[in-house]
Image (tube, rainbow, N blue to C red; front, side, top):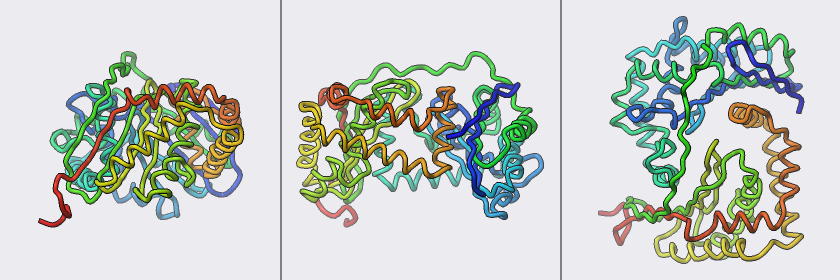
Length: 416
């Protein structure tokens, strides 16, 4: 992949990936997410991500939302525990329009009180919708308890009480602390001249201040396994097993990515899907996930099943984990597992937007772009001993936490 980088005078890093074709992409990453909020700012990073679309010094909300859409483009954003990202896809002839728009909303948003009130109501509805989806909520509740007492435990959406108290001043203070040059990466993808892009990005982002010293994230260090049952009015019982795992710079992350794919990855031939769903029909959804952060990580298994099948399902999951802890994969199995993961990565990279977002995140946190060939090479050199070592560390039943959302009634949860 042909890419170029540059550091602008105010510390903003520019990453350009050269592609042919008529469609281009632009993303701006800010190294600020939920874990960067103060105690009284729960949900603020996400609230800002919503509110930057509500008007600038030169545009009303309607004009922000229609600026790219009227020429067939797409404008969007997301917030995570560690970053905020605003991104757009458009025909390459509209690059200047997209760049000017995104710089405008990131630098010149006015956060009018009327719009902030409406957006709080929107997010409150988002929270209600999320609580109506236990298969999503349970992931966050797991993290709240795994990272208990740490900023990573905070829910990205925040909580209703704190959200209602947030003000324009809170927004401005958070932006002043975090939306600074060294905390930003501007990523572009398309058939553009890099020198021209560099000049334009510097022009539109020159008002972003240089970073201030003093911001430091506290590293998580105290994980204690737990078992927790929470009542929910649902048809299914939802269950998660979890353990802390490796950060995004730990060399062991590669064996765990492969191990996770073998155990409960997205393919229909994952061990959990075959054992729990295909052979026994106990579940519609069963999967495992490895999520690395900058200084820690989390591994989890999710299962949704009938209450009567919960113990059987958990026994099958435990059995599959124990197999991976006790015996090396056969040569053919190991080779096929690597080929499968490599194929999934290459197919995912066919989406230029997905690749740009992944590359931008890597450049934001690691100050380097990990080329696809390097990722594939690191997967190819994984050994059977590494898989066993990681499986025994991450799948150790003494270190696994358990979280269950369970209906406490005996009958249909919707019948009273």
